[in-house]
Picture 1 (tube, one colour):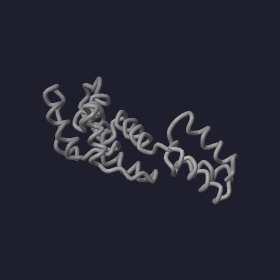
Picture 2 (tube, rainbow, N blue to C red; picture 1 turned 90 degrees about the vertical axis):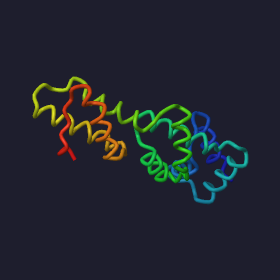
Picture 3 (cartoon, rainbow, N blue to C red; picture 1 turned 180 degrees about the vertical axis):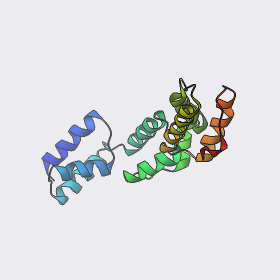
Picture 4 (cartoon, rainbow, N blue to C red; picture 1 turned 90 degrees about the horizontal axis):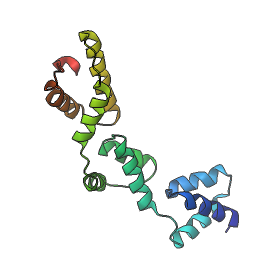
Length: 163
């Protein structure tokens, strides 16, 4: 085993958690041979330094705090080669008392703050707010329902042709 590869991994993990996939990428970037990469990764796993569950949970919390939907978070984690169920993601949402409906409300409120008096401009702002919520992976039907129910009472007129 390469002491350099192992030392590099320990240095990385001393500052924060990483997934095995990310660590493998970092070692490849440093041009370590494949056998040294695998040996170093096996060593940190044997010693219990690799905490993928903690890394996954931190990533979920980070995405959740930015307003991303559970399905979008699952997709992002799959891109990082992390196998996390949507149920587990919802457990973390529940643990932190976060719902996707509340996320959508916050995202829409953020974009609809100070809505223009001009009808045409207000329409553009609403469309922008909807696109913003959709870009976070939220269901279009849920976004429209929340927009209609929560913002109609605030005097924001919602036209059905937004979708």
